[in-house]
Image (cartoon, rainbow, N blue to C red):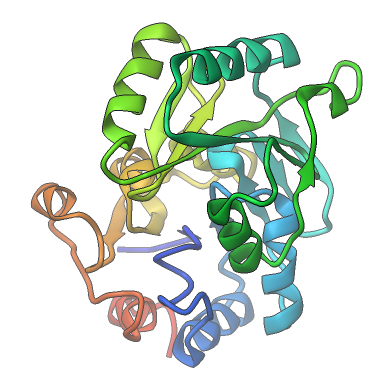
Length: 267
């Protein structure tokens, strides 16, 4: 297959279980860029959670953030921003709190990351992973007219499926999907990683059939279904592995490098 663009999720995919990039993965990215093949990060993270990766590993690339709600080019310019308004976010938060769900909420709007309780162990862990400090407060910290790219619920594993089901019932027009066994992403209507990569491919006049993508969790599924060459990481949930034929090694192995080398697009 003539692959003309490569997309990759970050956590559980581009980074290993210690949240660092393997030397082989870094080499693969460098080889792609030398060959003139666009490499694009597609993540539920915000841009502030991607830039430390660029700084540590010495490269830049376009990024699709908030699972498709925000697209930033390689020159750090916003080329697309969509989501829902503050009142919708307020309604979701009120429902979460009134329902007594065992979760803590996070609001993301472009560069902002607002949380209700920075002392929560789940938020502290997320801060360590993405190397960004959250801002504690309420939704009133959002500037007037701000677009909420994502509302994130950090849950306990035994509660997340119930919370997901209840939120989908209450807010059927929103895009709600798990990105790990504790993270539940809430985005605007029809916003997915698939919609994000479709916009990038359209802008670059590259057919989706000529795209490769790497992912490891449920919020990557639509993206993987959309491209011509999907790669599911071996650390993905077992039921996803039953759907996708091209299951490669885990994020702790040189899986991305080996897959791209097998395609013949890097040396």
